Image (cartoon, rainbow, N blue to C red; front, side):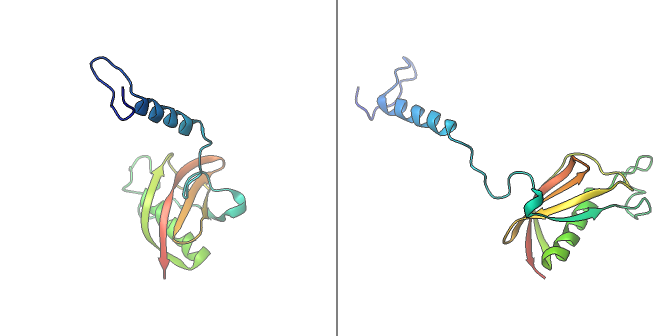
Length: 142
């Protein structure tokens, strides 16, 4: 069978080319994972930290679940934007990605950590050791 032939679906004969491709995929899967920009937790050494506490009297809380108020995600993102402005003097231009993992209750103490260089900034919001939210935002000059 020539090396350039393909796998026959009916008889499941594998050509040399397909076997080489399969082996290269296996080799790629065995390599150490690479860390891409925006991945991984924000570490204390490369981060800017800001405390976060939303008071129970905040105007968005009465309508955000009347009997059990939760801090809305947009309020947390507003705090991230304020932290970015305080850290770099830049405004939040776009939310690239965000994931809210646990609720923040009114009056609870949390910490916002920002890190990154250039326009893409990673953020984590934590209450003690619990990750509440994480994501990537784009910054622009104010």
